[in-house]
Length: 135
Image (cartoon, rainbow, N blue to C red; front, side, top):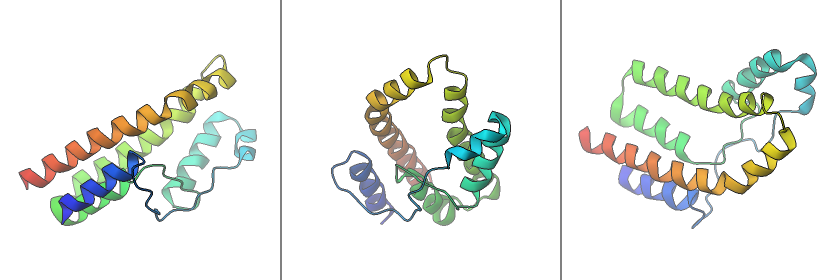
């Protein structure tokens, strides 16, 4: 059953099938940044962590939750996964904030985001399969 879930994540993230994901498709309002980049990142993290303004372009986080809940069942790994998710979500705005050419950075991101999405789908699915096999 979990193997089928892994396959669904792969086909969704490779855009072979579009699955509706449970999320609020809103972005963090630009007004958050008027408080400065440090405070904006803190507010961004709180809003994402509490699920108020969460938009996930990938199904991988849902797969991680299912694996942690039904397969691994260890609190330390759940905390590590949450920390990794938060760190991963924070990297993009931080890197963009320190970019010398933010508009160029945005254009470049649009050019490579499909590659990022496909690569993360394959790597995430491989990790999920490894967890399922080792359990």
